[in-house]
Image (cartoon, rainbow, N blue to C red; front, side, top):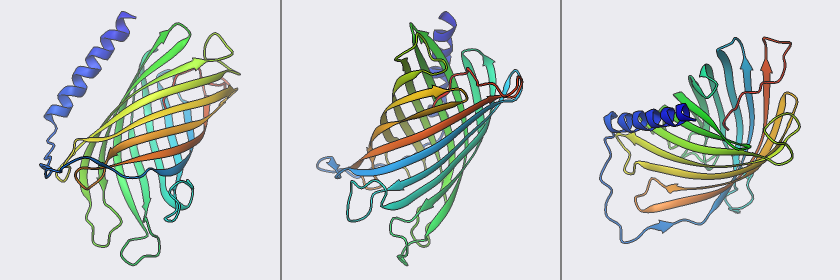
Amino acid sequence: MKSIFAGLRVAFFTFSILSILTPSYAQEAPSTPERVSLPATSENWNGLYLKLRLTEKWFWYQENHYRRRNSVENRMDFIGRMSQLYNRFGFTYLFSDNFEVTFGPTLVWQFAPDRGNPEYVDSVFDTRFWHQWLLTQSVGSVKVLHQFRFEHRYKRDNNIGAEYEYTDRWRYKITAYVPLNKPRMENKTFFIAPSNEFFFQSGKHIWNIFEENRVYTAIGYTYNNYMFFGGHMWTYGPTNTPGVYRNRHIIRLNVMYTIDFRDSRRPLTRDFAF
């Protein structure tokens, strides 16, 4: 337990130093009389997660997401328009049973809010490099994960003539896996997994370093090499207009597939974050 808390202290310290040393170029937002929150919108995210153990220390990690958002006419229909094709890849190195690091590229197709409108490019392609620290600890039968993720993004919006801009994103998420029918997380376990994630950003055109807060509660079941999980996520954060904030209700449906290639493709027992 002491090593876990020592690792957390180091991670928080390094996270703070990186945030301070990275140039933010933050623009001073014009003053607004009050904060304005837009009406809630809705989305549906469907994901496939892969984690493959290649050697004693190395894993292959992959996420593929198909994301839709509400139609223009109905803010709460969840699937009216295409939103993103989101693909994250990486290699994971296991430093210890409680600490691992992952790094790799992310490829994202962003679809226009009004496809077919000549004012928008129908889809644009974003590239990112990401790296992540994942620390785990046990609190009784509950497994707690601390995820520090860093993304370096080249992105643009769908407006005609928009240029690519470089931004950095800093994320911290805490997740608790709570087994419901077993004394710990293992095969054939029903579980609930609440999580809270905070997003910060920096870049030349960024006016607010706070990007978003995501509160997600998943329920799931483990079966051999598979984990099925899904639930509701609520997000809140600023828009590109200073003083105006948005919030979203997102239904997430996911499958994770794990293999240990060292021993006849047995299921992994390693923890993961989603």
